[in-house]
Length: 305
Length: 305
Image 1: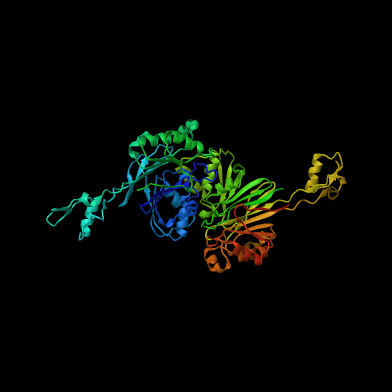
Image 2: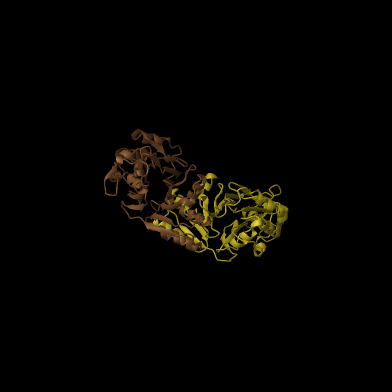
């Protein structure tokens, strides 16, 4: 089952060197989520051949321009492409006013319904749920109300061992096996023990998106042991004072966080325009946390089953 | 003296094939104007190595997203780059509300002053003037209030013939020569006739930007004999019904307009996403008006002295 994060933008507030502002496409079990939507995101989605029609939920971490300014253009494009599905937009207060003012002045009314979901400052709560996964907010430390997003697969069904499965079982009995129950007869007697006919479920995978934020140990527990962590690393350590002033992180801080949270893999992004060459950022992070990559445009990071 | 139009975006409402939405940099005698500012304009300005600090006046033709959605990002970037000069923004009603709402929600206050100039529906009036040129609005026919922009150099000074210039003339006398006056003595007697010491002024050049618009003969008089005309050509003639419905033009219509207005050169742009290959658009226009080029990204069109 699929679990892929595609990087659409890796840049901090100032786009530079062909890098675009923040946006990522998160695809889990055929559900497509857009996370942040900086200027040019629709072009990046086209460049990497994403299907815009499949995106039904867009999560905006905060209302600094480099995280949402591509949204209005994407909405106009979805309208022109004759979208009809509802579009769910998750953000802190203000996005609805920004979108509706622009629709009003362009005298446009999209063909589809937009549903605004307001994020709460400092909250750590589930904002999306379906039968396969949840998305919960991560409280970040930034100049503006800012939330990260944690994608977690739910516990998956046990896998039936087809070689051992007796003939003649009812569909309901097989469904129950997947849920972890034994096979019983009408009077409740156990016919087959669950563990004799099934394998354990595949593990539940997780991805967390943390941008923009100062180093914040308060969220280590929430992100403990996740598979893949994106953590902003706007600066290298020699600019730590600047990082503190602007409530951003250094590469070393991102890596220290990954280490303390014991995540499997770290991606760093949101690079300041002062870095043309990103090698120093990667190098700094890898010294603290080896399993780290740069989240640059076009990168696709897969969490395996 | 310089007179250059750099194309930053050639796309219609839907960006496609690497084409960006409408934006042009117009540079005349070292004054830098931005005309429209679709999504991604700041990236295009950087790509073509424009100096953002030199842009003090931005003209927005209308409030369809593909003509202004890059403005907010450009403003944030100008702020981050520590701009202090005033920025003049010209548009139909609504832009100030759109900009100020976004500044409020991002809790940002630019270092520089923004001055909003409201364009009047259907007007044909001078909205900018300095000692070298004027910019006037062109009333366009579109679904939303929409104005084109006509850049015209003022009549230039006569050029002094240095070989014939007598020694000992006062600076004021030379200045008067450039203005077309004869050189006189204190009592008003003519010492030298102007035409003996000067050449005629270089000619005054002109550029008109017309996007988006249906074919509109009412503005032929205003644009008669201009040097360079940009006229949208969203469709080819086989989509004329679509052009009429959406109040856009075909390539043939753009060319017919150029022919009737007797302009020197025509640029066509604002191409629909249905055209991957733009050759049919150029071919259609050239059949009617030979001196025509595609206004594609990175194209620089110079009007010679």
